[in-house]
Amino acid sequence: MLRIVTIVACCFAALPAAAQTPPPPAFLGQIVVPSGLSIDGVTFGGISDLAFDSETGRYLAISDDRVEKGPARYYELELAVTEGAATLNIAAMHELKDETGAAFAPKGIDAEGIALDRKGSKLYWSSERDLKNQPALYVSDLDGGNVKRLELPDAYLVDDAKTKGVQNNLAFEGLTLMPGRLIAATENALTQDGPKATPQAGSPARILVIDTATLKPVAEHVYVTEAISKTPTAAEPKYNDNGLSAIAALPDGRFVAVERNFASGVGNHIRFFIADMSRADNILGKDKIDPASVAAVSKSAWFEINEGDFGLDIDNIESFAFGPVVDGKQLFVIASDDNFNTGKQFTQFAAFAIPANLGQ
Image (cartoon, rainbow, N blue to C red; front, side, top):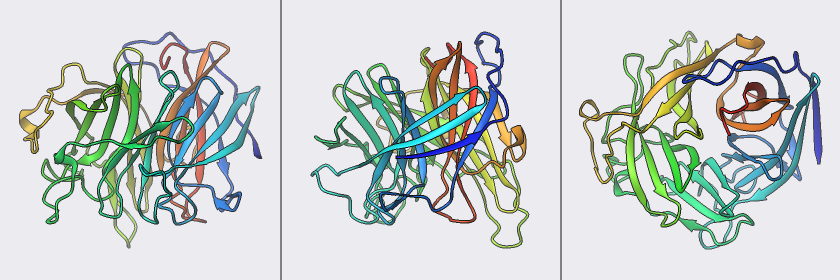
């Protein structure tokens, strides 16, 4: 077991009660994991989603390693912030298996989302692409057995001509649970629904709602991302993007969404929103949509992180989770995906305090 200790800048601050749009969180501090860290001979990194297990007090952190650094896997992490000090224990590593019980082949999975149903004794995870570039949603028992690959609507499946289905590396990033429902979100639009996000316009991503009893889809909604907010300044390569990278349910039926914007030479711009599906059109079964004619998921800005905000050198934030309540405040943790880009990116966990009744 590895323990990494770092000192944070401040302790919990007093926060007002939660509102329709909650107040911005109070920054507590961060932990940056040493680049190239190895656990049992397997490189630690690629953290793409978090889920908090209230029974164990641990965070489940899924890696998007495509079985190139090690097996498909997720970690159990113990993260605590007390009296100005933060500690991180990488307590366990678990291999993810396919629906036959076999190990995933290299490039056979691109794990991105993870969700825990402790009461139902189920673990859900998502993959953006397999060997045929198809997306996938999986469910298993908590011990990793009895794996099932969920049947997806045809609209999400990539055809040979690539005229429909998820766009490459822009599939199921966000995953969360609501009572009786699994919510999965694509990062950007399906090919037939519209283009990727641009500096002029956002992209109509899809939200797929699945009944956890039948494992069948019961609803679909459109979530329009923001336009790309930053212009690249690097000479080469000139690159920028924006996408929906993670979601987490709120007790009132809304969810928190994070959009990650990157521009080469500039860095990252991370935006958090409170999203509401209650008045969005149900597009279940539609192979193609006209986004302009569909009532999308509504959203309101919560807070954002630009380079330097909170004193952070912010990296590729792809995940977050509501943690335990401590001294009347709830821990809110965000994490970055280092893309196994040793020396250029890093795995970062940043901790915040929010009203105790927001994420319960």
